[in-house]
Image 1 (cartoon, helix red, strand yellow):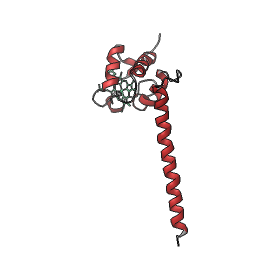
Image 2 (cartoon, rainbow, N blue to C red):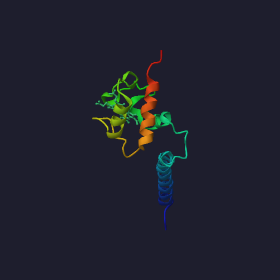
Image 3 (tube, protein in one colour):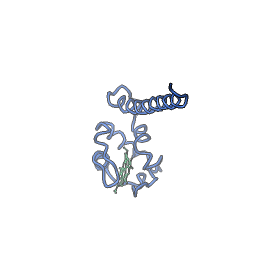
Image 4 (cartoon, helix red, strand yellow):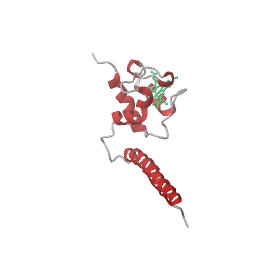
Length: 117
Ligand code: HEC
């Protein structure tokens, strides 16, 4: 006979794996909606918040792994697109993760991190 403890463990595992599945599918879904162009709301800002903020911070000033302050960056749009696409040292490549339009959007969004005066 199965002990209660065994049944409980199986239940917990089930709940856990369903949970993990949902986490992944949500993540996949959000990337996917960007890809099929259904959502025009997914602008550079959203991409930035999802993909870049953990290293660069809300205003580009967080400097994880020696990242430069994006709000002070003097790079042109095309130089940024190049770095975002192919990566640079600890900066990951987004070639596989984002479409080229999305890379452009987020590169353009970086302009708005610069101090306006
Ligand atoms: C894992 C952390 C990490 C993530 C995620 C990340 N970056 Fe970076 N980024 C870095 C690091 C580190 C550098 C510095 C690379 C170097 O020159 O050594 C950098 C450099 C850059 C630069 C060059 C800045 C300059 O003036 O030299 C740009 C532009 C940039 N990142 C944009 C982005 C964008 C846009 C995203 C999201 C799509 C992103 N990064 C995601 C870590 C990250």
